[in-house]
Length: 117
Image: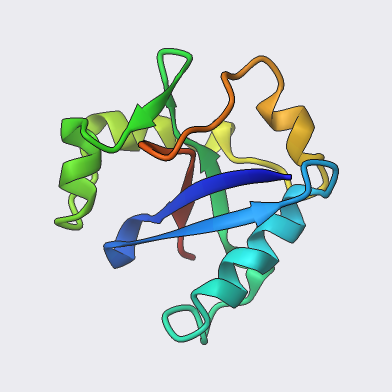
């Protein structure tokens, strides 16, 4: 099991998901939608776009300026770069595959950026 802090970029909200690393990314989308069911009631899970929040190979710290700006619904250049289309996590990949080579997630970090359709 892995604990991932997920920031929904357009909603100024974050959620923590505990999920089996062997599951596909699609199941992470389903878990995010379930956890944020009120905010995401009109969005199908498969339409969520997920991106790893890793800046320079390290997880994005909650104390970083980019993370602070997310709380104001502002996507900085750093966040925009992390959410470039070619960095989107594919739904069929296992979570442990996309986390390979990364330091274990910690509480003071953002691990996944969620973009709404």
